[in-house]
Length: 98
Image (cartoon, rainbow, N blue to C red; front, side, top):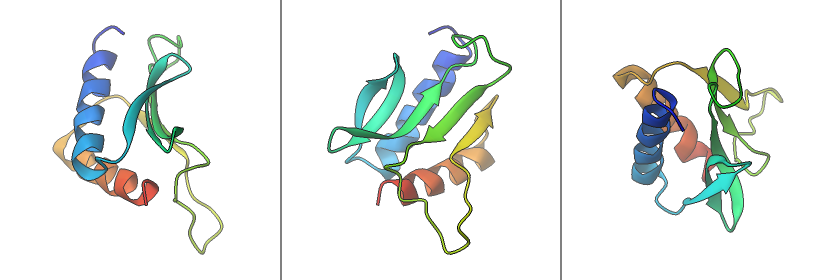
């Protein structure tokens, strides 16, 4: 994977490792993912590799993101990970990994 997406994926891997150490790295359609019991919960899609406008941080159907509203996002556009967005990502990953 080329930079800057490689750097984004590596930073995401650090965040996942810190807040959800039970999620194991696993390739997901050839791109980074983190799995629980062999099933991917969190994944990163490279915008460069996918020839898309931006990269994506996503959560599979295995993620525990459901809430009482009946509506929640399952993916986010990522162009950079700032200190503020890292906090949000950590919260989402921790919740997804429950």
